[in-house]
Length: 315
Ligand code: SF4
Image (cartoon, rainbow, N blue to C red; front, side, top):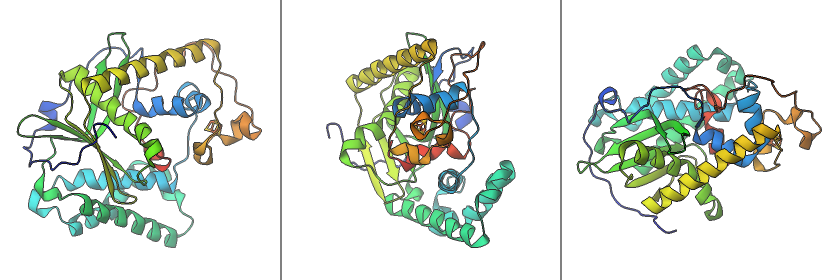
């Protein structure tokens, strides 16, 4: 794959998130898009409609909740001093982080039928966290940012935004974007799709900070693989053109009220199958006036336990 690299990364300096947050631009959010919602539209325009226009609720699932838990543990792990970031310390975070997630989102407690299920589910989360340690040594790096909210406005006025799992900055100032996936690495033919989200983030960093990230790194904790990609300006310009074209297609669908279902691998996980014509359902009437051209309120697009649904299907 052109641009794919496998290189060691140097030990990194610590940067205070509150002081060094990547350009978060103030102002109204009339036209904005996150990678999750862009992926929704590419997967199925009707799914995008259900989530963005109808804003239909989705019940949490054990698999999506596990993704949220593993991400929370890996974020919290770096609160500890470098030498204290052991496997045991990470494993010790699993149950407290789960309790914290349930306290914030009580419906999570109801996703298991029995205590035994919760126990085996926690074991799966534990395995993923252990697998992380086979991929890198957290005592040798110091992330600049974790769960970083990023935004940038393109020349067209379209605002791009999202959350980056981890941003590393080398002593030379080179940027690495890291994303944890709780699924398995995609087959080669789906790898470009898996990298779309990362190029989206790289474009946001480039447009807001003027610097092309040196490395995009996807860490698949389902099977212990890493996919690395070194983007260049041509890559990011192509990503920008693709996103602009996607946004035009979204606007066109909205203006025409034409949100066609696209049957595919995601259907098995779709919470709205019962409303989908592909499965004999009927979508609700479209909301009428006042639907803003915005994917979701800022901060909501990646919140909740369904944020990692894409992990399940190698998007
Ligand atoms: S069931 Fe499949 S085709 Fe129907 S809305 Fe969901 S993802 Fe789209």
